[in-house]
Every structure is written in structure tokens, then in C-alpha cells.
Image (cartoon, rainbow, N blue to C red):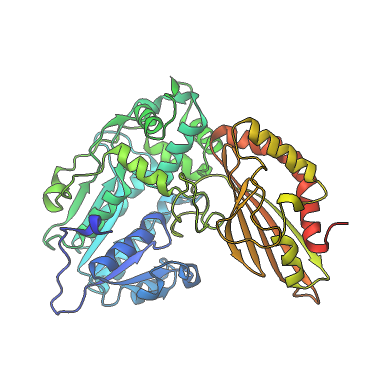
Length: 502
């Protein structure tokens, strides 16, 4: 993004070639975004990845060099760091369940050794804010040790220390989002009264890109943060206001231990328990930054650092519901997010409920797809059309469109058509029809039909997939309340597509 890189200094090479940059952790939340920004500023980018195939869907894949290998493998590290000017260390074992601290230490030592052997000129590392004179959690202690190992390598190292990162798909943001959205009234651990300084992901990226261009004589650890300082409870209230929610009732109680509160976070949010526990451990202390030093080296953008509410609003417009399930195009409803980057973890964005039915047919792909394309309106959906009519009536009673819109043409569809309480989002005859729900519900839903030739013989196979992304606690209640009806409508719908009405 231009607003991220504008005004930043770049790394200077002795020749006129673009500086070569290695990004580790490129399949992670920050790394994938960082590659985009580095390419934008003109760097030559190489990434180290265990599986190069995982990168093929990234928009920058054709513009980078990939070294396939594990960061624990000295040979792979040596190959990845060869002729590199700036190395970004974005490796982290947050989801490791055993020997977490030792694994972090060994990985940093190997990376430091390989960087020295290959005469890397600069290391940039993203860690966590360290609260002085307070006992560190194992997570933050390992982050601090990693930075120390990299700095003591003798290579000029910029360690950027950030707290809660606000951006769609970030673990910290998803934890905040789901706690706030799902629980209008909550009893909380006492750590919600600790102070914290969140930072927008765009500002983290700006600091990471800018760190490469800092004078090579400079080495050290630098706090980075946004302009706002809250307690975590205040941050939840600020989030609620930014998201258009009512003010939350928050009742801190002292009896919830970090382990218990991690289970609570893991239950209420999509963040995995192990990750939740380490994030919670990091919040036991105040997370207050002193960012004067870094701001003297990397000046703020012209319009200043991103305020918390703006960061939330930016994140909510792009919030992803699943890295694979919701990569829908042509979304037209006002609240629809832009396509998510494929760099975010699979769990980011929360629960995605699916109902998948596959039925083989003796008919050709074209014949089956003709039935699929004709669903709805006066043609109905299945032998359980009455159930859809009941759902349409319920939608109308709460102010929705119901089934009254019908369809434009009784046989053919086109992208953008209204179809009862659906809209045609994607149409690729004779293989794919995707409908987006426009009925009133606490969440978002899609219905997709894919028709392919039967790989096991003549005829075809139709795959019918319903996808539902709940919004808040009511969204989950809604899914399970209508779940019994799915057993009536979805099987008969798939059979009707495959074989015709019987």
C-alpha cells in the first residue's frame, strides 16, 4: 500500500541492484502481507517455506524466489540466506505444545549462525513488548531471548516489539473481536484491567519495511505501538462502539486463573486453546510501549499513526471468515468484506459451518447442471419445498425479502440475479453455481453446487455445499436451531439435482 511505504528509506546496496530480502514466515499473518509491501518498494524478495506449493495462491508468488526447506535445517537456511542483504525473522512456535521455549531458542541460534556465515547485513525481527520489572510469561521470555540471540550475532539487528495487533485475521484481533461480539455480558479475568497499547497492522508493516532502511550502525530493541492506551476492558468497549454494538457489561473477577481464562477464551473465540493460553499469559502484565526511539528513526506517516477505532473499522471491512471457505467474488451486500488474503491462519475469522452432500448421477454434467440452474422460484428446491416456503415466511415476518422475488427467468440465471432470498454470486456453466443468502439472519450464508464428470465411470457427480458464517452468539444458536431442518431439505435437494424430481 502506498500509504505504508510512502516516505520510508530503503536499504542501500553497493551496486545498483535492488536489495535482496529474505522473508521467513511468509505463510503467516504478518509475513504474507510484508512480502507485498517489500515488492512495492522495489526489493528483490526471497522466501523460505517448508512447502512451496502452499504459496501458489498468493498474488505475489510469480514475483519472488522460493527456497523450499525447514528453518531448522542448516542446509536450507544456508541456501535461503545466500547473498541476502536483509533477513526478516518472523518465525514463531506459538502453537507448539511441547518444549516451546527450547525450540524457539534453537531456531534463533541456527538462524543467527547461518546469517553470520552468509554475511547478512541486517536482521529485522518482530517480537513482543517486554514489561520492565515484571515477571515474563514463557511466551514473552522466549521472545526476549530470541531477540537477544539475534542481536548478539554481531549482525545489526532491529527488534520491533509490538503488543496487540489490530487487523483482520490477527490472533489478538480475533480474540478481541469474538469476546466482544459474542458476550454482551461477561465475567472476565482480572487481566482485563491491565493497560495495553494496540497497534494497527498497517503500522506494524510500515515499521517492518522501514527497519530495513535504518542506518546499519543502529542495532537494538524498539517498542512499537499505536496512539491509544486502554485497559483491555476499555478496548473491548471501544471495539463495541466501533462495530456498532451496545456497550458491554464487563465484570472482572479474581478467581479465573490464566489457565481457566485461556479455556474461556478458547471456548468463546476461534483462537485455538494453546495459542489463546500464550496470548492470555502475555496480558497478565501491563503492555505499555515507549516508542519515542523508533519514531525518531522511522517517522510517522503524514496523517499520523492509526487510531484504534480506525484500525478496527479497517479490519472489519476485510475481516475473513475462513481462508478457503469464504473466498467469494462479486459480493454486493454493503457489509461484505473484501477478499481475504490467503496468508491468514485457517482458524482466523471464526467458525464456519458447512453441510456437504455428494450424489452420483447417470446423467451428463450438462443435464444435471440444467436442473441445478433451474432451482427456486416456481420450480422450487426439492421435495421439501414447503420447508423453504416456511423459511421464506419467517424471513418476511422479520422484514426480509422472503421468497417473493422469485427469479428473472425460469430456466437460465446470470450473475447478479435475485433468486428468491438468494443472489447469484458466481455462475460457470456447466460446473458451478454459487448463491449468496440475502435473508435476515445473524450471519452470512452461501449455497454452492459443483457438477463434475464422474471419475469412476459414466455420468456425473453433484456436490452441494451449504456454508454458514455465524455472527456472534446468536449466529451459533441460529445454526443449531435450524440444523434439524437441514436433514430434510438438503438431502432431497441434492437428489433432485442429480436425478430430477421423483
